[in-house]
Figure 1: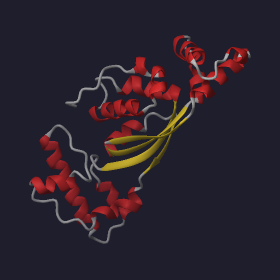
Figure 2 (figure 1 turned 90 degrees about the horizontal axis):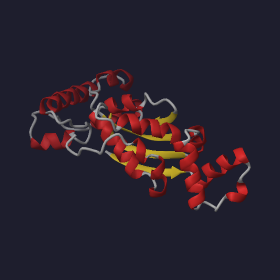
Figure 3 (figure 1 turned 135 degrees about the vertical axis):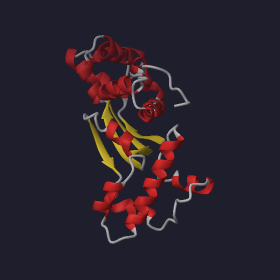
Length: 213
């Protein structure tokens, strides 16, 4: 899994939006401590969190499973541009068989599927990957073949989200009750944020990331 922050809105956009409400532009210190304190006080502590919607972040997310993507897509106040299975399934057509399951084939399979902490699940995923590979060698279109894709199959996307929705995402998905993979994703997204923006989100982190997930 890899998360790269591609673009973000400067904090002064949010502080100026807040100052518009009270016409307090003369109190601005041009993005200094006063403006940062204003964002924290109004957006976080006073729960006028609609003002945080002026801040947007765009992430390039690579190497998550389709199962994790389904969980991510439940956060609807965001924009998604996802790797197309229709056009990219050909990537495994030229691969040799992933069977038998040995060290070499495990390494090759990990290019295409996310391994879990459970060996039996991983073996089942490799078998499903091999079934998909064999299916693609037949006269079957990608639009039909993708119905046989394992949930562990890796995908990637560009994901844009505003700060208010990102707060909600981090609060829910850093919880121990969340899917293990999306917990890892949530912490990776937080880590990718600009350091000067993290004060908006740090109290939403439900628990520290457990690396053994």
